[in-house]
Every structure is written in structure tokens, then in C-alpha cells.
Image 1 (cartoon, helix red, strand yellow):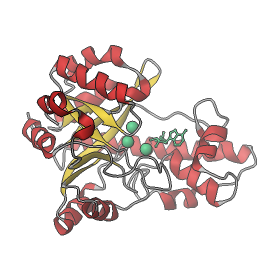
Image 2 (cartoon, helix red, strand yellow; image 1 turned 30 degrees about the vertical axis):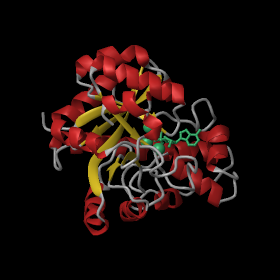
Image 3 (cartoon, protein in one colour; image 1 turned 180 degrees about the vertical axis):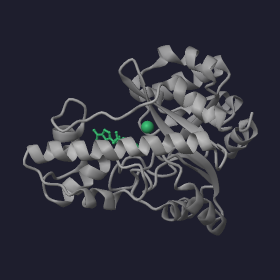
Length: 287
Ligand code: AMP
Ligand code: FE
Ligand code: FE
Ligand code: ZN
């Protein structure tokens, strides 16, 4: 939304036309890109951002579905970075379709994820939990295989009742089957998106409280803040709208939809922005 609108009417009253943070089954969402776009269309959304973790393999199918269902697609990605031991996510929008540097880096991150999968499964086996790799990969349609896929296989095999239980007992940092994966630095993620012509936005900063880094990331090329997000409190949203104004950054928003099975609270289309933000992102792309 434009900042004047925030002042005039409050972000809660702004109609969501575009949900700019959505995952598909190319990473850890449960809907195919086509299914996601169909749902967005049926909810009356004019646009969505496809922001899978470390992969852009959902773009093509989403764009084709977008034409069929009358939903504009922003080509996006969500990159994980490590900042002083805290995980920070950067969203990229409207990168070039075939940027060699981006495609190669994502392939490398995908390979690292596959290597980590083998290590996590070995740890689970050591704990007496047999989870076949093929079963995990059946949940991951793309090259971005992650812990949520392992968690789903563990639920299916009856080792745990929910995905959350799989994380808290086995998969999260500090738990017995946790294995870290390769992460970019925030600066590296920003540069990777910018060199591909994309617009870079700090994802859900309210989740990890990294405000101290924002001024530096603006210098590195950060262009927006995702102030509106399903896991942000009203205070978080207000604070980041304020910070965005201070640094003259775009205010973006989205649900972080992963599918009802994974994160039921993050309902598609319940968080987002107006189409003016989509237009601003497209104007900034390539610069
Ligand atoms: P990975 O990409 O394999 O490191 O897994 C990260 C993803 O796991 C995040 O994007 C979240 O969607 C999900 N996740 C992380 N922590 C939890 C948790 N405690 N419960 C459920 N899902 C989680
Ligand atoms: Fe996720
Ligand atoms: Fe995220
Ligand atoms: Zn996300």
C-alpha cells in the first residue's frame, strides 16, 4: 500500500488485492503452483507472489495458470540467510527469467539441501526412526527439499502426530536430528537478487527481530520491508511501516501461505497489499 494510505485509513482497512508471500509444492507448500493460483483466483485476488524457498521452479506453471484464472503473478523467491547466528529471510521479486548466476546459486543450494536430507535421515535412523528418502522426496516436487517434507513423512509413518511435533522433538535447531544447511549472508542474498534485476524485500522482520541490521542492508540494496505478515502483531506491522518510511522503502505484505496441512493459520489472501505495490515493484525491477 502507498504510505499515504497507511496514514489515512490504517493498513487493517486496506483491501488485500495481492498476497505477495506464497509457497507451492516446489518448496514446502502443499499446493501445486496451478492449484495455488486457482485458489487465489477464487478468493478474488488480483495478484500473488510465488516465493518458494531457494527455488524458482514454480514460476512457469504459475504464470500459465495465472493466464487461465486471471491472476497476475510476481516471480519471487525467498532466500534464507544467516546474520550473527539468526536466520533472516530475503524475498526477491521480478528477477530475470533466466539469470545464470541466480539459477546456478539456487542449484547449489538445492544440492546442499539434498546432502543435508541424507544426514538428517541417518540421524533419525540412529534414533530408531526409519524414513525412506523416496517418501520424503515424494512430498518435495522441486529441488528445495526441506524439513517440512521430512516432517510430513514422519506423520505419515505414525512416528509423530503433527508436523509441529516432528520439528519440536526432532528437527528444529537443538533437537537430536537437526542438521544446518548452507546459508547466504543477508548481503549476499541482496546482491544475488539485485544482480538478477529483482527487487529485494526483508521478509517478516517481526519474527526474528533484526532491526539493527536494516540500515546496513539498505546500503547493500534492500528496497522493501514485509511489514504485513500472518505472524506479525499489530505493533510489529506499525513499527515496520514506520521504519520503511524512515528508509524510504516499499511496504509489502503477504500471508506466507504453505497450505492448510502445514500452517493452517496463514490463510491465503488474508494478508497482503493493494495493486499499487505490485506496480511499484514492477517499476523498480531491472533498476
Ligand atoms: P528448511 O528449509 O528445511 O530449513 O525448513 C525451514 C522451514 O520449516 C520453514 O520455512 C518453515 O516453513 C518450517 N518450519 C521451521 N520451523 C518450524 C516449526 N517449529 N514448526 C513447523 N514448521 C517449521
Ligand atoms: Fe516454509
Ligand atoms: Fe520466511
Ligand atoms: Zn515464506
